[in-house]
Image 1 (tube, rainbow, N blue to C red):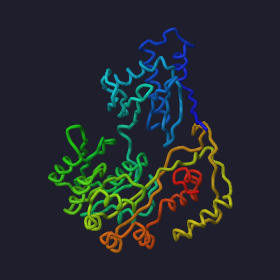
Image 2 (cartoon, one colour; image 1 turned 135 degrees about the horizontal axis):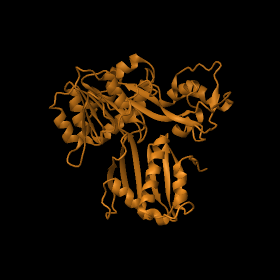
Image 3 (cartoon, rainbow, N blue to C red; image 1 turned 90 degrees about the vertical axis):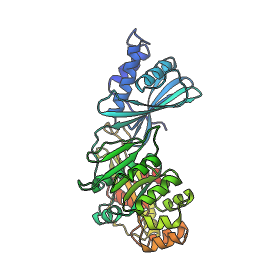
Image 4 (tube, one colour; image 1 turned 180 degrees about the horizontal axis):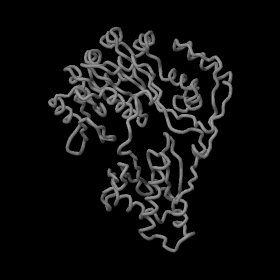
Length: 414
């Protein structure tokens, strides 16, 4: 089923004008300018993270990504596609004649940095705009959904001579969590340097380095090591060379924070091994691996309370047995997502993280050094504080923050 957002804003007026219903100025540059501006401003109002301008066979489709989900908001006449393409290239500082893939930025909105990517498809050029607030406040690690255990945070992140790695697929909030960790650790007497592509949020007191066409993570990291850092944030470990230099930094008195693309905290070990990092370097340097997913919060204005079904209770009991955990189910209810004007009739509003944390104790280090399988490492980790993502997810279901339908959408639990 397709989901749609209905706007009560000037985008309706502009789209009507484009259809020829309200003006005789169709096709003028001012109409195209107003249309693109309206689409972008409404995306900001609706908390969209991305805007997609997608050329189809018969029209130009516009979609917003809100809380991780794509919603179609408009279909624009095909004969306006070239003008919209031209306008997007103009404000993104892209070459007008070039139809190959390009990257650009829109800087005409005072509160936003907007990254733009274009790519040619069979019906024209597709544009994706990533909306980044310039001065967005960094949320505390617990606000993001990290387990509210200060001891766990201190044991996981307050380290020296080591590296902490955030793991998750694209778009699951890894960078946001890293910023929160940096803010948690940031003090006037500590030199914190970040290497990012791009710098998404500017944080007072940090030395933030942005990668460009003339520099790389590797070159920047080598230079940073000569800048007397205490904490280094490396935006992403992408290859063996970056991984090895990050490990070297962690072995020489620094604390390194980075991200990697993999499915869970334990698979970080496998990913590093496949990159060619030695078991010795992994076991001696990695302190903590964290995996996370973003799940949608139930809209407080319309969520409908109900009892858990037998199927849902059976599932929760199976998790208790499988993952050696006990949930307090006494008097607990769950909620259905209903939908209202506040949440654009989808039943969810905003997102929260669910987390799993693997801290490398002596036994885990020993298994990694011995080239143990992920199954062996998981079995050992489960004897300690490590619990899979689903466990934290169920805690948030029992707290009424989300529901099992949303966990199933994200984790495929049924």
